[in-house]
Image (tube, one colour):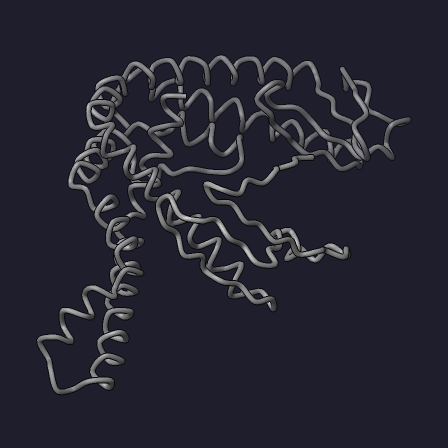
Amino acid sequence: KGIASLVCLKTTLKVLPAIVESLDASTKSRRAAAESVDAKADVADDEELSVDSDKSDGGNELAVAIQGALSDPELAVILEAIEDVFTDSTAFAKSPHAMRHQEIFALRPSTDGMMDVLRKAFLANVDDIYSLADALATDNQLTVRVKENSKRGYYLQIPAEYANTLPTQVIQPVKSGKFIHCTTDEVFSLNARAQENVRDLIFLTHLRIQEVLDFARQRFDALASMVDAVALLDMCHGFADCVASSSSVWCRPVVSDGGTLAILEGRYPIEQTGVAMDFVPNDVFASPLANFTLISG
């Protein structure tokens, strides 16, 4: 988990400058548009226009705040510390199999002689598994694929149509949908060695990254602010995308502290999913003198 966290953190910190740049361009564009409108409305008082423009620029305040959280110098320091020990190509991968490879090859080569030996052994064992799968397919005229998961490791996959004519060397056959998952004595042995290589590599990598993990933990405030900023930006983007792609009329609520809650003909956003149902809009009103009941399904 520690290794995966650093890999994910490296990937995230690498893209932050591009996000900040995009936000900055959007902020400047909105400000320029607002100033243009104000200038057309009243070209006689430049000083007053400038003050009014700044006061009316509430829509940009959130973007500026997000930019600030994502531009914290501490984040660049953390990224530099991670890049000192991780290879340039190390990045997050959605596939668990690909992510495991990222983890065991994360540290730069020649960091540890034992790790270099284990990596070569792991690659050799995996190559041998693929070679055995190709030989099994060629010798028996069938389709054989190598699969991998965190629980079983490497195993073979054969179409279920060959269920009654499986090669004699196949062991542990299990039908799963349209395929048969199985292995052979040789593949089983090589998989055991490969998994042992992985465990040793994970352990050695974990020992090597403790200093970087501690370095990042000492700057947790910057990381927490960055996470909150990304989450907020994601939520705002979701709202904007929903409104922009919708044929319905949306409105932005006016929020006040301790005021009245009033929603006229409110509709739930699930209507935008394309579900064929008749939705009935509902009014909501609440104030210190008027309550309402919330019923959840």
